[in-house]
Image (cartoon, rainbow, N blue to C red):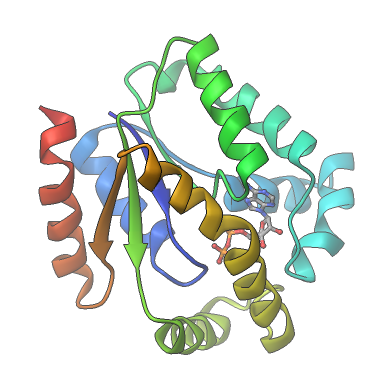
Length: 190
Ligand code: ADP
């Protein structure tokens, strides 16, 4: 199963992807986690990305594509993946389509986790207390939601127009949302 999980910051993509990977038996690839890994390791790429991420802006398409390309070249991706955090704009959606075609691994499903904005802000505030992520401060959160509206929402429309989008309600208990996702993915998994 090659799945792209879409949704705004705080929609629960990361949490649900972690749960789905056990069910689907494919790795969870989070571009946010990959970038935070680079920052933590103090690499040149991490140094370039940190300020951009902390401000809630998008890291360059070029950096993301390079990072994703090397991740998708690893052996554990042979049976598929859950992609979380990519694509975040139309250029990335286009690049992803080309990359997947080149490696002969076309996408099986694009799923959007839908959560109202008020709830996103509330959830991220809760996470900020629990995890202390540098980009979970109010200013950066506002910026990330804006970037989502401006740059990522068009990606959702793009997949919708291609008839490839499944929308799943992201409001409710964690287990409920996981069950909805599993039901929504059943046709693509078969
Ligand atoms: P969230 O979904 O809560 O915003 P992520 O962990 O997915 O968190 O991403 C954190 C940050 O990492 C983003 O705000 C952005 O700066 C950077 N990032 C992650 N994925 C991408 C991407 N596909 N393109 C550009 N920047 C990205």
